Length: 386
Ligand SMILES: Nc1nc2c(ncn2[C@@H]2O[C@H](COP(=O)(O)OP(=O)(O)OP(=O)(O)O)[C@@H](O)[C@H]2O)c(=O)[nH]1
Ligand SMILES: [Mg+2]
Image (cartoon, rainbow, N blue to C red; front, top):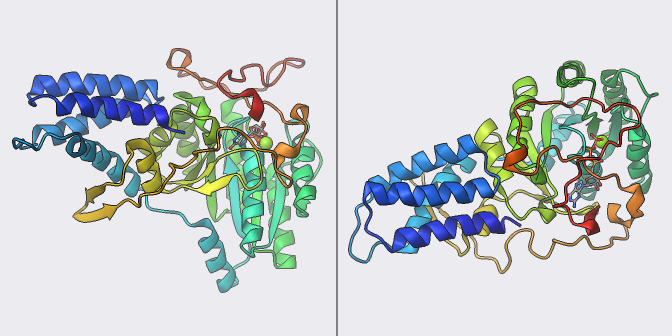
């Protein structure tokens, strides 16, 4: 995971390390870095901003004789990225739920948002499993009342996890489903309500209006955007649009087990200034891990480093493996989603996988009847995980 991004950084640091730093040198080197970042699916505007910040840092650098070492430049890169991530703060979902439980303030309500196929329903199941393991009682709300099979899909997860799911018929008002789930949880003293939502409607505006209504009616404690790490450059458009409408509180980046690039994490944080809360690392119920900035940076930059940030020093723990290592294949899991037959697992709809395909037009519309939903599934997702 994130190997390509690490390569982008390390090749740029090498070329810096071998030269005296004039402004021209820096521009050339930053050009290489920009290319590397773009290839790693970091969005163009993010790449431009990052390299402008780096240029500022590098121009001010006083170079001693032995000082131009790869590590020194690498630290500058790290600092810029680390500052961006550390400014977002941290969301500890389990802790937040426990705090509300102690205050006896009713169930903690989480709404999951994102376009179709990013992994919302799967993530709802994973989080439910995680919360239960932490002694938190959970109810699921099937608020995707649009897509055929969506209610059954969530119900299957609920059955496997022995959880209650609150559902109505297809076409029902999703906010009413959410409200039912909250009412049920109040009555039965359930700690958390996880609301699965639709990812596609007639138009993007309909989708946003619907989500707006759910948010208004159920007043969630937290709204989590679910982004597909394989969607590449398109992730930034999705994140921006959802953030504009919902002001979500954090993001979950899915399919990082199949993601060799890692730019999506940077793009989401850059666009929204909201933290990445969890990473999806496979199709099993246990395949979700808290996002760890230190490990993410280590995964990008390699060895343990000290990073100066806001006058404090962050020491990255050295671990033997970067995050996601060894997770590139989905292992069969007795309790997991991957135990499902392949044809039961719907292929994700990846709207864009490369810079060339990027489009400003956002179309979350339902395809004409008969057209297969997952036509644009990526070739980048290994067969083994589909
Ligand atoms: N490899 C891998 N696959 C994942 C991950 N998360 C979700 N998936 C797969 O992505 C596909 C789509 O997941 P869903 O949970 O149905 O996506 P969704 O966002 O609910 O889709 P809609 O209901 O259509 O909006 C499924 O095949 C999942 O198993 C992950 O972290 N890693
Ligand atoms: Mg779904």
